Image (cartoon, rainbow, N blue to C red; front, side, top):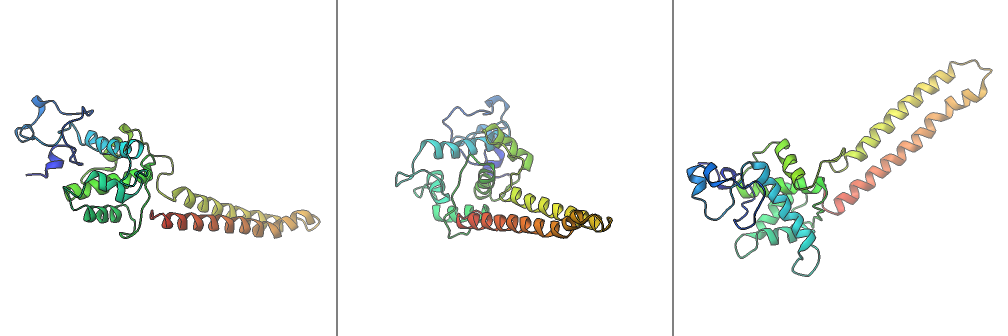
Amino acid sequence: MSVRGIRNNNPGNIRIGAPWQGLMARGDMTAIQRSEREFCVFETPVYGIRAIARVLITYQDKRQARDGSSIDTVQEIIDRWAPPSENNTDAYVRSVRVGIGADPDQTAFIDVHRYEHLEPLVKAIIRHENGSQPYTQAQIDAGLRLAGVTKPATAAIGQGRTMTGVKAGAAFSVAGLVAEAAQDLNPAMPVLQLLGEWLPYAVGVILLGVLLRIGWARLDDWRRGLR
């Protein structure tokens, strides 16, 4: 017998109550799904994933943490998602922190409107609720898209910065080719020779600046617990 959340297409184990999109018609349910009295049954896992994302977005946009602040850390999110009265919330928090790649003992700030924050958070919740995360990346992305959060061109944290470094490296290689070509020119062309001599150094300075920027961005991610 499959895990309850998986067989219900409800990997967040969201309780019956709200008129969620994608709820399965009773006539389409299996016998065991019809016996469900506590948790929603969705038509597909995509709708269940969407429901997780919508709950998390509602927490951040319309609810407050116990101290009156915005719900924007793993601790505050899981305190609301799985309150201590019903769950081992501390263990859940540590599990989710590890799942998103943050230090288990470190505060991890979350912006659930950003794909690169929401996607690993949803996966970590699914894994903790069900003991595994069985869904494909396409299913996860489809659920988040239905919730209004789409994957940007450079979705992974730091991916855009890494690409900048790659482009700079390519520019440095082109500069080397230009320098070699300039050195092959007639010696009566001193300006081009000078360009050939100094261009690699100029591009090197630019590349150093790019690497420093990447390093600062990584440090900032580490400081916020999102590595």
